[in-house]
Length: 127
Image (cartoon, rainbow, N blue to C red):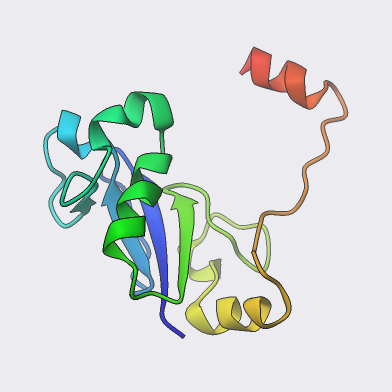
């Protein structure tokens, strides 16, 4: 199974060393390139629209540049999926774990968050 997880970022940051994770610089059309990262402004793209569409510019780019992948995922440069709550890059999902999860599920999403103090709407408005 060919798996590629786009790691959307607008700045240099510590990235996973696993080959399934691809650092993609979002909004690359509007900024200086980040060495070693794949810019989202090659081929068919909407990179200049990043201020309006955020990480979706990376997904748009992936639609035209990662068509040979069986699985394409998206992660924020500081938020990864893992088997347990951790900020350690050694704890993020690897290709084998992703393939195992996808053998029983169509998509992998984070654990549901419960907002006890305020509603989802109020949290969004406050943030």
